[in-house]
Figure 1 (tube, helix red, strand yellow):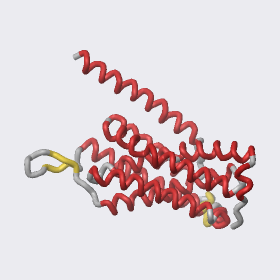
Figure 2 (tube, rainbow, N blue to C red):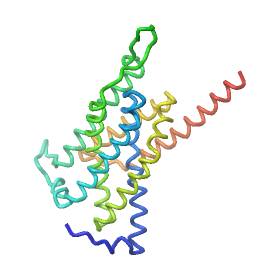
Figure 3 (cartoon, rainbow, N blue to C red):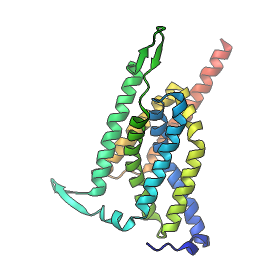
Figure 4 (spheres, one colour):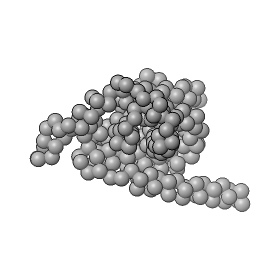
Length: 247
């Protein structure tokens, strides 16, 4: 595949690069939320490594898909029909990924509420069960593949030059790598924010499932709902802190 490096420095290309980078960061929010919550299952010293590995794998998947755009286009061709509804390879990936994310997220919420991942140590104190590093990375790989597929199809629909897509993906991933540990600490420090993040992942799972069934929902509505809910929760956290100081 021929890459036109000169196209990257055209004024209109720089505008497209900035727009696509912001979009890639927004689309990466759900990936960061999943990685943050899943990595919490590991011992604390392994959590930052799992997050970096997760995002690095996401970058590799995205770049690999970009270099196979001609193959990726064929993934949107019809494979079969069910009750007269056509299904493509893209639909099956989004449908399967959405179902996996839905089941995994509901399981995480159940464990949070019921406390089933807590065990007693020899001193009688409760602590969380730690999972193996490879099992956590395996789950991250599965969801990375789905989110990468969705992200790259969006990029392909916005710009024509492959170099702009590659630059946007790399810049967005570097920014996410810088902030992922800080975001993870905030999510895991506040149980209410963690439940909010899990609820958002359920919403994203339904969006992926519906997209796979041919019912497209604008992501802007979903991210606005997350932003609004997050702002309300920030106010709640500040209010609780203020009440504790007064008492």
